[in-house]
Image (tube, rainbow, N blue to C red; front, side, top):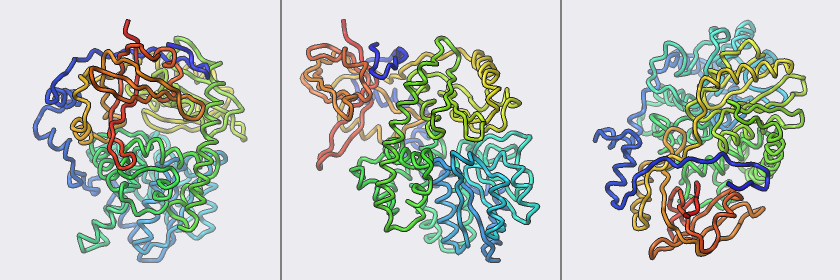
Length: 565
């Protein structure tokens, strides 16, 4: 494939063998079969999920103790501090807990550490500042699983801690002295669904509190329901699997988002020209989450959290600032990724690169681009002001970054995360040892081909709103429930033009038989030399419905294309 203007060369994609389908019913069967859905009962529950299918929050280990301690703090008028993480999952988790506790009459405040100067997790220095505020109970969210030292220190100062988190824990630093630990991944927890995000765990805690606080089922339901879209933002932003409970929470959260009453979200939609009817998981992934994360990546996390917990009069300026930070974030990421290619290691089992000039806040984004373009585990690092090596790690499905780090844990000052995303702090002198250790670990797993998971080649007659309606029932799409990719053969290119800022996207008007379709290819420099007027292409794409000026239209997004010889 052609070389992009930013010097990136995509790893050649392999098209998975797929049937050619002309019948709609057979296509629907294939879509279900590819998701291991054949039993009528399972098909029904998948296509028509219900909030009643969620597990009881009381099944989570530690929930009873956590609820009792929180209600006691509220009754006694004790001050509560919610200590969150700085990413979108942490911001939404903090929002759920702070807002939920306020409604229950708690005297509650929040603290989110600075990504650049404090990094992830609760530390003794945080506890000292919390003590000055006469806090008696700390509730962590999206962090805390490896913060036993700070939790023990807090206990010595008369401050209790409840941990709500979803990250894996190192047994050496498990928070044994916490009043309660809420994490379905912890040993001995019978909670059936293990892959909740931080926002999901926070939502479960609020749900349990509501059962104890409200006698009226309608009041209780309204209280819990208010946080559904906030929970959906957190779990989709954190790229947890959209299966099981996550799929239910995301599905109903996205629907709630379309009619949200949260003023900060409404302001985002206004300033980004988002039609609420078009909201889906992609809206969260590409419009909401990047703006929330941009604030913390560039050292202004308060801008994001105040969008939910601050003065409504400030929302216009807050969203305006989030938009500015997001654009700055894009430029920094593009620059760092281009520079990182100079350290690209051909045939390596993972990519690892480091520069002192890269901003701490964009390391994960650069690592994610390696996963997207090369389908390979990646580690991107920089040197913090205190001299420590700080790294963000990402891995495609089928790889476990946290297990890789656990294999060489003695080389880190601290580390944490899960299969798809993790991070660590280390002495810079250990850089080569860390790289060697990770190379050794991932060399055990053969590199997977960058395969496009094609569902089927279809005829042009199947591209209609009946298909869109069926796909809507399969949604939301994300990790663990990939968006269906279809193929059209022998598409004649009638028109082709580059669009967007920097002319990096490609709009293609193509004809198949007697029907014409508009295709959109994003970041498509490498398609320009292939998609010429008059050429015949096989095109792989996703399809969705989009409302524009009152009309519903098909939206075809190109995944890959090839010229027909």
